[in-house]
Length: 115
Image (tube, helix red, strand yellow):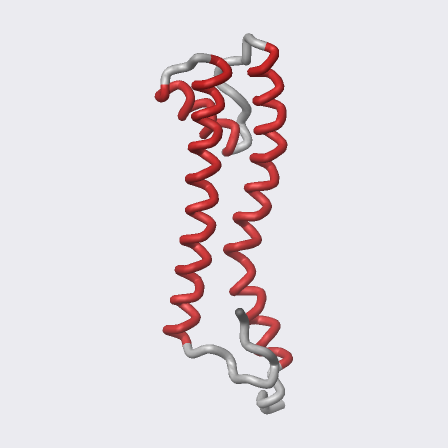
């Protein structure tokens, strides 16, 4: 996916395209996770879609659910979704930082680089 140190760094326009693709992937991951959280609140806690979205967004943002779960199944879902949301946060940040970190390291280790 990324160029090796034997190849020159991508031109700026192609690098920006790569950044946009990574941003799109992170956004898709967040949107799918938000839908999963909203659907779980609707299914397990019988919330409306508006309340399910709000609770899912709050949990995905690291704030916790707005309304505490009432059922045992809802409590289990909220606990597992909270763990999942933490991993999604780390994965999304990694997806956004990977091309930047690669470019910086590539510029330092590129064999064609003049010292």
